[in-house]
Length: 292
Image (cartoon, rainbow, N blue to C red; front, side, top):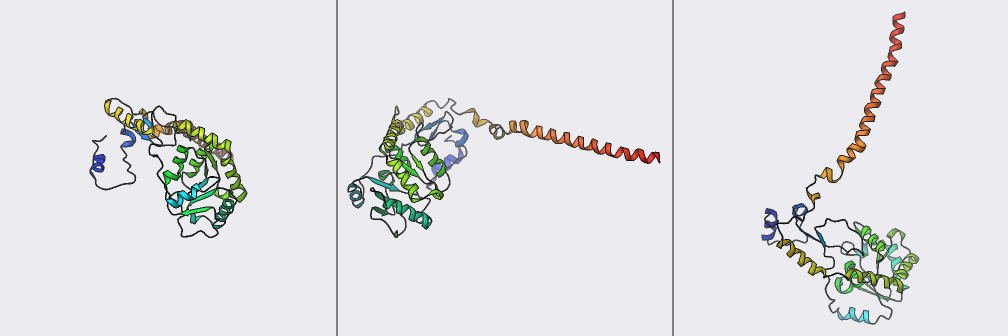
């Protein structure tokens, strides 16, 4: 794989990339390291046997927080709620009526709230909310970090794969989902009540414990299987499906036989019947002319 021209070019290049996708990796990779929210607790994934799950390998021990943020958290008597809509969506772009609904619900909570807010200010901000344009993801929690540390999640999908991820989190018992169009103050407060319930939080902790319960850590697993593939590089780890043509992999040939062929046969039969009917319809006219 490392002998490939494209890979060598990227290897020697001084340019930096956020994501590098090399087409040859899809079929020529001996063993792949996949990052997901850890089976069996969050979501399901159908992957070949040569794809190794190393979800959570990047999560490090929390670092000390900025003094102001640390003080805000420590002074909270009822815990802290963290709100972030990720890097793809600015919270200030949420419709004003929905944003006000969120603020009204948060004002009713005894917990303090830390909100990743990119704008300069938030009109009508309740006193229990701490705003910051940047917050340490690992130390306060992103989605993966929340699963890692056993913290329940309320997912509000906006676009892309967020609906799938929020659905997987809800189905796995790590949190609940609420759609923006269904957002009301009472509905949101009910979602908070659900995830803050001690029984729900205890179940999330148990699921997180199951996620951590591995023979070796995710990083150790990544190192082991990388070295394993290097030691036994002559072995074939790749799935045979990698060599199957696209039309066979997608069962298009079966679809053609089961659906297209019968429809084609039906069309030909109907066309033949139509032609026969036309011929029979024209014959009486011919005979009547001869009699006259």
